[in-house]
Length: 498
Image 1: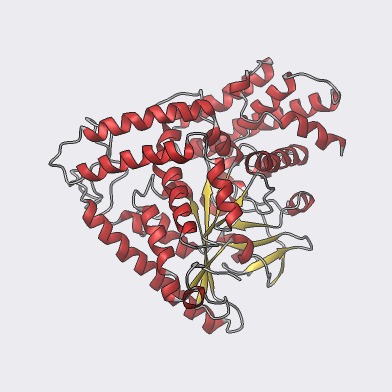
Image 2: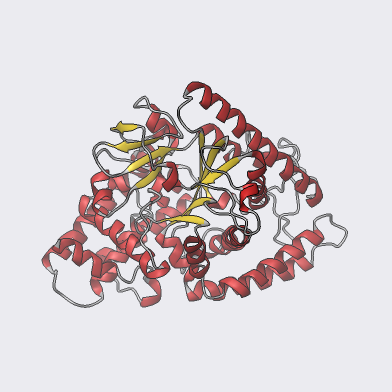
């Protein structure tokens, strides 16, 4: 029974059956970073990991745990890519993160005491450090498993290193997916049956591979289902497979995602782009976007804005439910929101507070929160999708067009090289092939093409791709600390023996 909350004291007063609720909202969060350990520090590199760990992952997971203790269930579906999970648990990353948190606390204490954000920044730095020491000093996996086991969230898995799957050979696709699912078993103790498909990318008939590995559901973008005359927020079966999909609601997701049209761009929220150079913290508010001179961030104003925007979002849900009920009176109204997890807390400083305010408000508005598994459980019909993604143009251009044509060629050559090596040496022992497979998976990360096509740290991205390709062809041996995927060789061999 989908339910936003199951209070221990008086469940009958607050919980309602899905049939009695006005509608359902499904939050799907995609958590991902490419492998950055040992590959630079600033402005792109390890600093990126420590910032989002401190500002997004620790606050969000901590708040989800608090909601779980309050009795909330089916809060959201949380996708965590294997390459991110490996970094969230990595001993070197955790040691460096503790240093980073200590430094943040020192920098926050040096903010002028007459600044409106002084107390807020200092308290936040102290709380995050304490949360890390109490719950994350040995990695994020214990918290993730607890949230899964309690039913608070659904954890979505995925293929290793977040590759753009339409560009993979069938064999490498299966190796990446099988090993990614096994990583979840070793890390969290269960095999996800839902995944976040990297970049929401779909290649026709790709569900055959998902079917083979027990994947039952994933998210697509709205234009993908519109192209075959379907609707967002509605579950569909892919052809005659056992795999179901639902498309996120573009308008509802835009409320959260857009800095121009959405909540994060409100003038009272903290400005992500304006960093105080003296202290390395963000002390300005968005204000007038056209004004280069930013006014100080005032936490009390932002707190009030969170409440207003949470109410506004829920009002928009109610309006959408009314419209859906009018159009399809026999179907349960539903809104599916899909965004990057890093929006909450890192890019949108108040995002975690907004989300928890929404969740705590849903029962009083007679709205249920559900997971992606629940949202895809009863498909309306069977569909055959075309090629799609959630990138620019909703096609594959970001990962295949001229600006990244050299990466596409490298990726194909690298896959052929490793496939030939595996086929010719299935029974060999040793770490050389493991190194090759790790380099291949890191090379195939979709992030490099995205960063180049969007011209965001493009030089870093191209250097990373070329570096992994050169290491692969030169036979450079990776040490144990450089291999994020220690079991990939074992499962690659197993796949080729199937």
